[in-house]
Image (cartoon, rainbow, N blue to C red; front, side, top):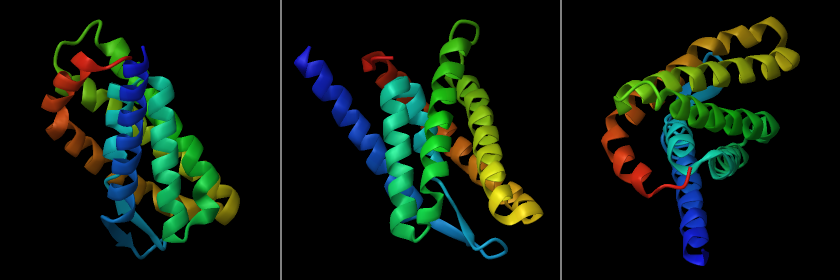
Length: 170
């Protein structure tokens, strides 16, 4: 039991670190909105699929929020925490539900990724609408691009999911 708990916590920390690094260190500025596009959401999707709901929520929320803090976007921490956590939950439950009817891991990842992209785009749109009004709609395109990039990378990494899922605890 203790070994399993240590394994869970270790994977949670690993996914949190991956989410942070690929959000903070590898980003493309989007000058129109003063924001940036990143591929950290890849690990939000993958954590939901591999870690299970609780550990995925924690790893995604902490990794992405820490990137906001260190990037100078502290005002976004609350929405990032909630949105990234919800994205990982959606990825988990969508993948789990699809596992009953779809065999292809890639198809399950794509469908799960579509839901996570919608949650990301909608979550930030609602938050930014209260901050910026109609100007918030300008972020729909970069948030969607970010989700698609994360989804493509998650599909590329999906062969590794099968191996990790066999050892996972969802």
